[in-house]
Amino acid sequence: MGWRGAIKGCGRRMTVPREIIISVLSDATEHLSAEDIYFRIHETNPAIGLTTVYRTLELLTQMRVLNKFDFGDKRSRYELTDQYSKKKHHHHLVCTQCGRIIDYSDFAEGEACSIACTEKELSEKFNFSITSHYLSFYGICPDCKEKNHEK
Amino acid sequence: MGWRGAIKGCGRRMTVPREIIISVLSDATEHLSAEDIYFRIHETNPAIGLTTVYRTLELLTQMRVLNKFDFGDKRSRYELTDQYSKKKHHHHLVCTQCGRIIDYSDFAEGEACSIACTEKELSEKFNFSITSHYLSFYGICPDCKEKNHEK
DNA sequence: CTAACTGCAAATTCTTTGCATTAGT
DNA sequence: ACTAATGCAAAGAATTTGCAGTTAG
Image (cartoon, rainbow over all chains, first blue to last red; front, side, top):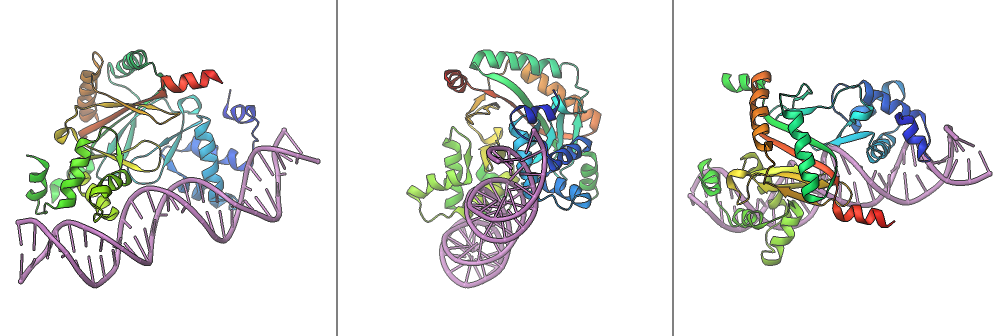
C-alpha cells in the first residue's frame, strides 16, 4: 500500500499540500527540515503555509511514513521510511565539525547481520517488539581534517 | 585526567555550580534534561540559575565530558561520556509509545566487535576520523504491549 | 453537507544573549 | 587585580495552538 492508501485508510484526506510535501521529500537527497520543505514549496505554491508543513510532517511521522531525525542542530529533519523511500535502508556518518552527513547503505561485511542478530537478542531479552533501529557514527570528515591541519 | 583537570587544563575555572552539576549527572541513572538538573539542584542550591546549567552543559559537551542526546521529545538530554562515567558504554532501547529508555551494555555476542569493525571500515572508506557512535533500537515495551492488548 | 484540513497570528517551549555583579586563581 | 563565571531579564528560534474560513469525499 502506498502512502496515499495509508492516509485514506485511516479516514484522512488527500490534499494538495500533502501531495506536494511528500513529493518534495521523495525527491530530496538530503535530510530536510520543516523550513527547508516550506521554502522549496513556497516558490511554486506560495499559498501553502509553514503550519501545514509542520502538521503534515507530524501526521506522516505518526503514520510511520516518515522518520524524524535530530542531528544536533536544533531543527528536526525528516526522511521517508524504508517502506516508502526510493533509497535503501542506510546508516549515517556525521561530521561533528561541519555537520555534513553521509548516508551509507552498502553495509560492511557483517554489519547488517549483526544488527539483525542484536535486534533478535534484545527483543527476547527485554520482551520488546522492536520496529526499527538507528545507527550513526560521528567524527571528522576529510575536508575538516585538512582545514584543521592547515592552521 | 578527571574532568576537573580537563576544565582547569584549558584555562577555565572550577566553580561550585560546575561541581554540583557534574555530581548530579554522575549520580543520575536516567538521561537528564537541563531543567531536570536545575530542579534537582534547586532544592539544595536555589542560587544556581537555569542559565548556568545550560552554559555548563554546553561547555562540558564541547569538552567531550558530556554527550548530548535527543530522544524525540524536544528537550536535549545529557550523560557523562564513557571516559568520565561510572557506567559502561551502552546502547539504547527506546519505547516509542511511552518513551521509556532502557540502557543495555551487556552487548550481544558480536555486537561490540561488529561496531568496532564497521567503524574501522567506514573510517578507511570515507577517510573519516570516527570518534563515537550511537546505536538505538526502537519498539514497544512489554508494558505498552500489554496495555494495547487490553483495549 | 460535514468533518477534516488550512492559513494566519498569537502563544508556547526550550535555549541563548546582554549586561552588571561576583568570585576563582 | 584580572578575567572567567554567574544570575536575571529579555530576546530568539523552532514548533504548536486557537479559530474562522475552505475543501475533499
